[in-house]
Length: 103
Image (cartoon, rainbow, N blue to C red):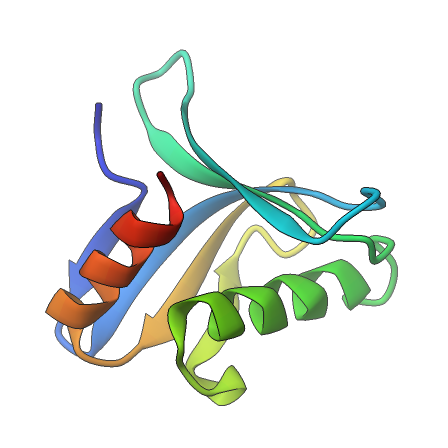
């Protein structure tokens, strides 16, 4: 199984499958797609209109990873369920935190 992230010099890129309009905001672990790529499964209550679901995802992950909200941003897949989020910070620390929340 591959990891749902890619380390960068100034943080990590995190791959997420987002389900909007859920009953709860929560992280549901890691899922591996048929093509072998892994992504973190996340649900938010927000609707996918005017970026509300993306903003809710950014806030939820910032809180879960213990980083400022400004350190998390959607950089790919803005209108898709499969998204890439850039999280700024120390890569080794972020990797450990992602592993902790994805189990």
